[in-house]
Length: 444
Image (cartoon, rainbow, N blue to C red; front, side):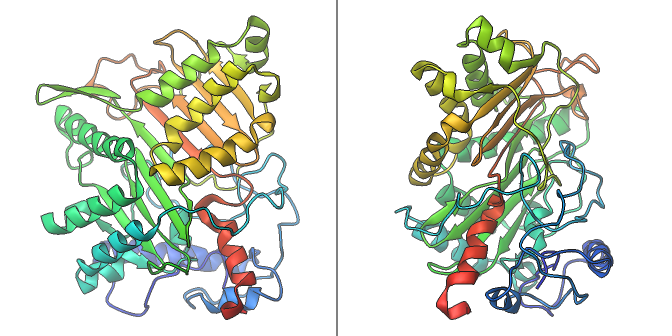
């Protein structure tokens, strides 16, 4: 198996609609072309045979096996825009790093006491509620490259089954799956992002592009209490990747955004992405003048600053800015609050485990800032450590600018993109997946 296998579950069976099939075939062809050019796989010798045995044979070109690339992973860091509709992957997964070299021994298979039974049951119920054709279009192997084919861009051509494809009963099963994995705040955030997308689409008379149903489900692997699996919920300004192995959960990459971030809908003011903006400003304004001088790289903000959005799984970014080991206890608490704004969108037990992981590396955490620090300032902040990568990016008005008062080209809190990732190879739970297949006796 190679990293770039498509990983369709239960091939061959009837596939998606002709338009989507053509797109899938195009992406599969691009993967095969790349594989034929000599892409490297992330498998190692020995247990790699078991890893490979789990894969589909949809991409059959040979690839050399190596534990890591011979040079820093290629590819542009950026990625905030997510690429055009035919965007595909041109490199093996490696993970975010500071210098193209992964830090070892950060992640291990162990018991976390997270209750994953509810999400397993909800995923099984969701799958059972799909038709055979919908299930074929939705389910991939846990190794599938489909994990990485997400985008925050509305026009991106996704696979899976969209909310528009589902009956009301099927939609309820999908909502139940999100509810089993997310906190009340996390579920509310997803619903608000979708609601604003619909309302903004109506405001500019483009509901064919911007609506509440243009969000897609894919499931990776088969829901299980012992074997690795996960799901992805993907659409405009909203991407959730959720990996499960036993009682371990990896909820990243996750993308949360909106344009606008506040809108009147049926007489109610709906706001979203407020927590990460408020927490970021509270942190930067807790710093001393000397600390701000180190943390703030620029007093001005570009139209788009995100470094590790869609199609940037292997971004290489050196640490910049202020290191957290010099912060006071109060300042450290405010920095952790920035992380909590993202992490607390998961169920409480999974969030607690993740926050402990982030706090354990707080002394090795760096913060860099661009833009203003007033309550209404547009800004960019990156929080980066060996185990977490967070970006909050107040962007220039985009395609939904007509839905709110905006100044062309001027970054604003009314258009926010934000992302949380797990550096050094554990986005999508990839490092845990690798360890599982290398160490589980039934896979040797």
